Image 1 (tube, rainbow, N blue to C red):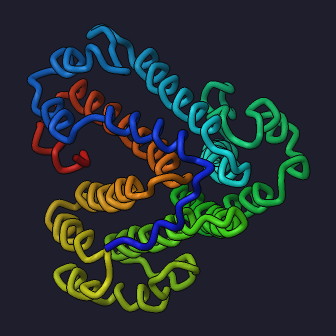
Image 2 (image 1 turned 90 degrees about the vertical axis):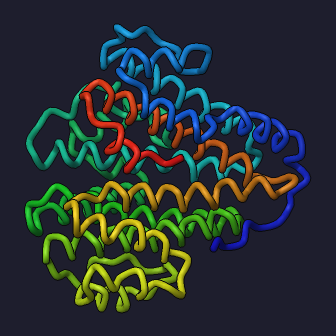
Image 3 (image 1 turned 135 degrees about the horizontal axis):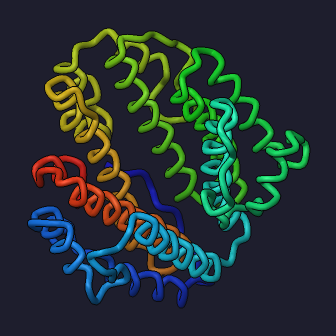
Length: 333
């Protein structure tokens, strides 16, 4: 089901113990289910009393977002302090750089204001204020090479079909290539395998969206995963009911089994996205098998980020008075 985790690194013995202790405090799956089943937004908020996410039932959207962003900043800062290897810290922080790049390019091509610094994540390798100056002056040479490549790819991706979604696809390719090389330079089997899994699953997402929109694009899949892009091209001609069986010999069978039929029946990717996150979480949880090493520390960060996303999603659904059944289709427990 999951790739290898890599070796033990006894330099991390105490940091690993701290990360595992914190992981035990992450929400139990039944807690998110209880939030989803709560009668109202106020009831869901009440369940959060005594947790990291305690808030008032009268909380505004801005206040809620600030609280969740603060929790994300805190865990990122802690993990950066626990990690000894600078290359692994760079790997984790680069995710924020690419997220900032996606947002900035969307606003650039749509001729919208870049927004305030608070719209961007301030825990990347590139400070937000420098990032903003670069885009205002349109002098991208001040950025590292990998972000210069992301700018070019994102802009070209958009103008190919003038589709905002193509910005993400183009930048995803640059990010995957850069981060895979980063993981190799860090000597982390765990991060290498995480990136190859990321590539495979992103390609599956893309394949499903191409099928749904009945578009053909043979040069859209990312290389360096375990699934050959040519095989994904072939999947575009297979019906939804045959997709899961086509992936039966891969670890991704259950993702297609859960998501493909739901896409066909409900015109929705909710269950596909939930199955994808469940697969990633399974690998991250397996990192606790490592007695000492960076793996449980990185896994804790990503699991905490997932928890924050789920809290945001459930509360947003409760505010919008969405039925619990729909929430259950998307949350990952």
